[in-house]
Amino acid sequence: MVAFHQADRGKSGMASTRKSDANRRNAQSSTGPRTSAGKAAASGNSRKHGLNTPVSDHMLQVCMGENASLLKFARARSSSGDVADIVYALTAHARLRDHRAGLMQTIVSAGASDDIATEEILHEALDQLRRLETYERKSRSRLTRLLEDC
Image 1 (cartoon, one colour):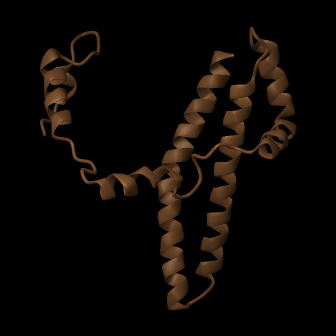
Image 2: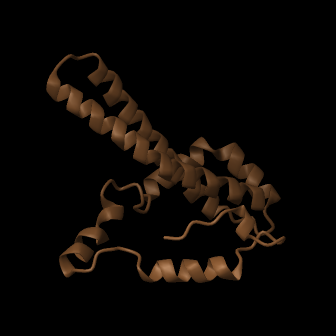
């Protein structure tokens, strides 16, 4: 794999032709599942924890109630008055917040015990918390973009 630095970018900040060509070559040799079994296993990765699944109508209604003032503000600023994307993003963000709270509760409970099995639970919860950060970052970015656009 070829590494490039800021010097490889032109004045416009775009990647140089040399870098673009290298990226194309690297993409040709990228790894991924090649067997049917590997592809089948990888296809379930995004559903492993349920954080990417669609939110329920009930969750949307709860979120609309919890964020009524924010949604009123967004409706007033939106040219179309449609804030469905914002409601969905808020609900997804709330789901992540609730998941984080559950993990934190597990960590606090496991931290109060000296049991070896509990130590494994603690390590697993900490690992999940670390992985959750990716989803939270994407969720915050999407929500910020939506609110800036209205």
